[in-house]
Length: 256
Ligand code: BTN
View 1 (tube, rainbow, N blue to C red):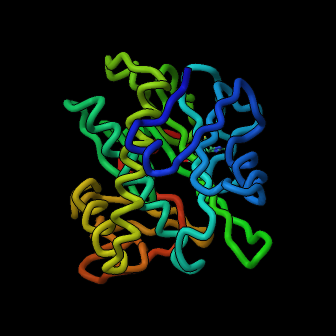
View 2 (view 1 turned 30 degrees about the vertical axis):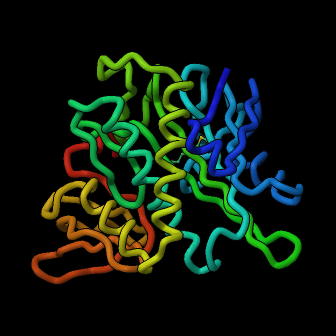
């Protein structure tokens, strides 16, 4: 049986656990109008139509974790994109805890990489609901038994790392870390604490990156994130702020 951590339960988080669903993010957002839906985790053994970033599909066979946390008006609407960084920090902490010897880093905005290959991803989706409230689904996919063969980048699973774990254990630790990091986020000082934690888990400053934008690629070196969560790219000494885009670690790109 799937369970949240004791601390998450005590902090008012609840769990809906399914065998199959189109997308846990879709279901989480659709639950948002129900009384008491805030802080509901939705997990499913498989997803028939899992969603990835940039409209991509997230292939979702049994054995991996597909989880969405529904939050209702957790922060001012303009701050909600920062929840992706809250989740990124929590997810990277999970991987560092369960695979302590792996080379785990966050790649902007919120992919968890091990040895340069993607082990977990986050998709944040939101919608306005009645009462001028905002529903936010923080969707997280973690490769445990299998990693998809992606056309343009490397992916890995816990099994590939030689770590035997399962979605039950990953959810327990993830629900625990999310409860803690959401408390840190709510404790405020702006984005300071999360940005600090994110920076400590991120690829080191100076890592060569390529950002793919609709108008072409930008190449530079990772220089962290700013107070709004934008990527700072050092291009020969000039800092460029990147709002959105697909980031590749040089050398990790395997396709065209
Ligand atoms: C990415 O492209 O990196 C984000 C992947 C997010 C996948 C998760 S799996 C659970 C949740 N439900 C979805 O449909 N997508 C997210």
